[in-house]
Image (cartoon, rainbow, N blue to C red):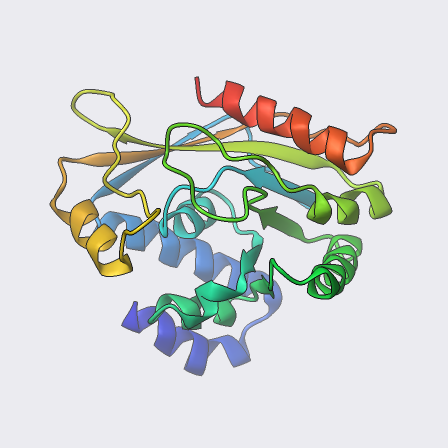
Length: 228
C-alpha cells in the first residue's frame, strides 16, 4: 500500500492515462498476491470502453479485485475517501465519490459519468450502495444507470464471490458489513484459510427502452444468477 501511495505521488504525474491503468492493474494483482488471495476470472472482461460494470458489493477488497481483473474507474460512496490509506489510493486512481443521501450530488456524479463514458472509459458501480452480507444481494439503486441510458452505452453485469480454496464454500472472512471495523475485516481476511476471489463477467447489454428502475431490477437478478 505504501508503494502504491508513492507511485501515485511520484510516478503518476509522468505517465499517460494508459500507463496509469496498466500500473493500477499490475499493483492490484500484486496486492492480492501479498494477501494470498487467488484471482479467478470467469466470462470476458471488456477489452475497451465505453461500458459500465455493475457489481455486487461485499468487501473493502472488491475494488482491488476488480482492478486486478480489468482496470475500471469506480463510482464509490464518499465514506471511502475517509478510510485510512484506502481512501488516498481510491482518490489517486480517479474514483468518483458520491454522497448517496444527496440527490443533487447524485446528479453531479451522473454528469461526470456521462462525460467519462463518452470518452470511452470503463466505469464500475456498486448499485447496492453499501456492502452486503456476502450471501443475498441488497436492492439495486437505479440512479447511476441514467448515465448509460443517456449515452446509450452498454452495461455489463459482474458477480463477486469469495470462496474457501480448500472446500469451495463461500468465505465470509472478507465481508465488511454492519458493526465490522475495517481493521477487523482485514485481520479476519489475513488469518482465514486460503481464499479465492471469483469474478464472473456476464454479457454486455443496452437499455433497449427500459427505464432505469426496471433495468436495475433485471440487473440484480442477473448478478444473482452469475453467482450460482
